[in-house]
Length: 318
Image (cartoon, rainbow, N blue to C red; front, side, top):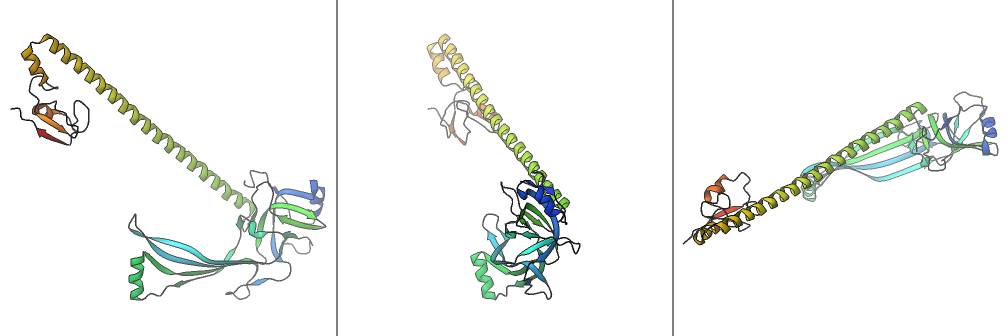
């Protein structure tokens, strides 16, 4: 859940902070927003690559970049994989930008934050050197390494941080720690208003995607049901036509002489005048003359079973 959804209370980091927490129930604000500058408690972390760069959180990452052959699309796709990552931390406080206030907030469990405001201080890409034999082997295996990207990120001393979490007064010391009840914990380099706008944009995007997905699902369901309805109606219509044809044929046979009855049995079911002269495959029905077969609309279907006619074999009566 986001800060705005739970009514996060914005509190000024100043001399009156302790009195605010003293008056709060349980000397605690369950979900508070506080902004301040980073100050190390004792020692600091030094950058491995940048001189005079000190911080309280340091993250070193090695990321492999390679091209992978997709057997479905038959294209080379970029692929990234973290092969090593190490994060170092030292205790730190949030203090006011104004000097001489004498108030500090100890930040606990910073790595539990959903948005850790680290700054990239060093980044270098080391390309892979390949021989001709390596290139051939990579094409055969379907993986072409591009290189290793080395990155160092730090939370610098003096950086401004917006903390969103549980603010507690304990034995005259103030702590900012992960909130309870499943609320999100933030330590962001952005100010609170920018953080809210980003979260609201994310929520709007999910709502839009939900609406689009719901509409697509309804449209797909409608077309499936409509297709089934049309198929069912077509089967009912053909069944009715076959029944009417059988009744009509029975009436003709009942009113005809013996010779006429023999002729009607071999008559085309379409025109009832010419002799049946076609065998429809794959269904195997013999029911039409060649002229009526040619007059059938595309795609040609058997008048009896409505199965699509793959090919026609002429029938010769001896």
